[in-house]
Length: 198
Image: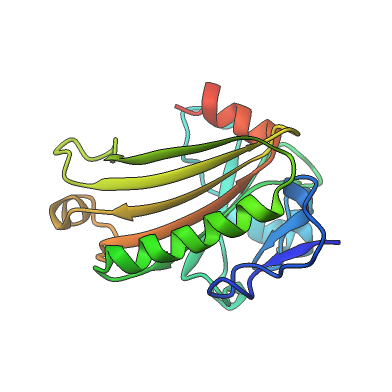
């Protein structure tokens, strides 16, 4: 049975007594890894709105439609553009906390505790602590990240990002400085991220 990331922890999880076997057992905004993007978008929408954010074009992404968002403020769906079924390989959602890093970290802790209970096939839980965000050369933007690696090769990332105002202004990004990011990735997309994306 799918566990809906969307109800208990700030509406992020539907918890049942059973534990999850793999990354496909979870949903973000009603979508799961392994679903077809064609269940949510027309082929024309996919072709018109897909974007590329990596050095290769092996994977593309779409921004989640605003009308699809109940829990998150924005998000992305990742897929292989050459796949005629447009199978979803990655889903991410973000929640904006204005400038309140403590509220973000509190919510992050709740999510991580739920993940720890629900994922029975965790091969690694990596608490990376707080470090400088690599895209900000000034070193003033920070990330507090915890990653889960599953036995099936899938992965999840839960991070609190605290961006410097200058970094956001210089890159013409959303002015919200504190963001919670939750992402799910298939084994294939996880491998791409680690080895070929950048």
